[in-house]
Image (cartoon, rainbow, N blue to C red; front, side):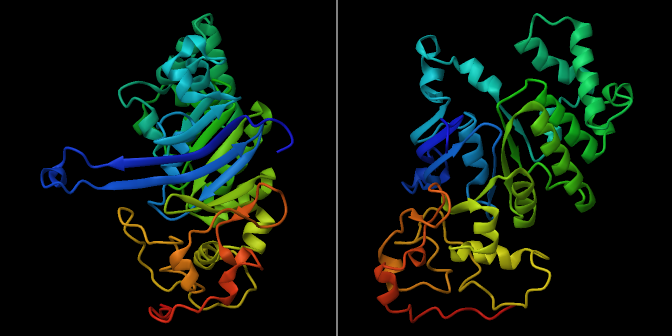
Amino acid sequence: MASDPMLSMDGVSVEFTDDGGVLDLFGDSETVRAVNDVSLELGEEETLTLIGESGCGKSTLGKTAIGAQKPTSGTVSYRGQDIWEARNDSKNASIPFDEIRHSLQIIHQDPGSALNPNQRILTSLQLPLKKWYPELGREEREERIHTLFERVGMSPPSDYLNRYPHQLSGGETQRAVLVRALLLNPDLILADEAISALDVSLRVEMMDLMLELQDLFQTSYLFISHDLSNARYIAEKSGGRIAVMYLGEIVEIGTVEEIVENPQHPYTKALQWATANLYEDEDDEEFPLRKIDVPDPTNLPSGCSFHPRCPNAREVCKRQHPGRIHAGGDEENYARCFRADDTHEYWHSPEIADEPPVDSP
């Protein structure tokens, strides 16, 4: 990254332990490592799309990035200031915690969860302005909100602002919460599956709108999706990067060309295979997994966590955990796969004889 990052994560892990529950009565508490040793950087006006299966830790990582989830280990910094140090000692921080939270906003998968069902849209949207910009009068607040509603295509604004959340369609509610995030002019917006609940016909329109507003507000996006085609679209349009997540780890990260056209990790190739119409003229390939089921996150496999499902796994994959192997292009791009290193002992290791690949469904 040419300049200092706006947001950085260094060796971040997040663990959840069942303590005090039923299992704990029998001494069987379990720990799930939702995020495992993740290091990422986001620059000004950058878009990073994070993809992976449900339960892989995408949302936990996103919430950790914006300071909504405390990491078990590692650091998350905003413009060089450790977020949790600022929260614990805001007076001595170079950037107060309130300023950090103001600068890092979120759009949830369920947009209605960000709006009070018992308040009109206008009332809900005025609340953050009252909190962060107390110098603004009522007319100034309403003018800002009306202007943004016009900007996102909800015109005339009064037709929408006087309604309750349940009186808006899914697309209208999503635009309303996008306005809510942008009202604070944030440096970063976490879009956590922000378009997955929309009809397919509205997804491209919503992504185009988000990118248009990104240019206007000069904000960055951490865009979470389980759909590689959506990740490809928004990363390609914004010149951003794609990060692939599996069982809490970033297993590959790179540009659209590197991730979609020349993936280095077998899991990325599996996501490709599972994405309809990603390649219009490509012949069908063999099913790219040995097993469909994801390993138990409380009892992760030894070595590479993907090896039980990987059709290319060899004995060394069961013994060694792959580090970040530079995968070409930008220095920040890598794959956690021995196959990305032509000199690794993987190439001389025997194939895994048991657990033959499953047949294509």
